[in-house]
Length: 227
Image (tube, rainbow, N blue to C red):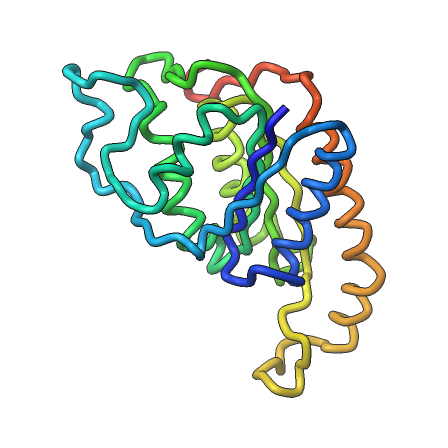
């Protein structure tokens, strides 16, 4: 099994998103998988440019993005992966800019413009999205985060295979809250939660990695509008 993970946070070590990804990959390795972590912010690439080359009837190959940049060889490696794990912080209610651009380039070439919206990806593989955010879990539905996460999960599920979501909420933003604007946060509560709750999130990420390395791939549920 090859498990390919992507860090969509500009923080490349020791912080929330990458830490959870590292635990997920440790879980996958414990199940015998080969793993790789791609740092998206190390790459120079764009999102989809609406050239629609991947939708041309004359295209020579399915699932190929015509844009040629640092992401191109990464997308080639996706074709051989048995599982994909994407980690991202939540900025203004959505994935980071790098993650969103990556998702566009990753998913759109495999989406066939047909009534059943079937995928052109050759296999069904396990996938996961790991989200880290400052807001508490109690606010997710109120501010609409759940709907966005579910939509991204449905997209991954439709294109590649069953997508598991892991949400790490009310995370710690700063190493030292006294050095940055933070009036709206209770710094002591943030530090306490990072010490007491975040390790449990890391354990959940480890178990997610174990599941990603398994061959148990349930079929995705159809979109509500296709029922």
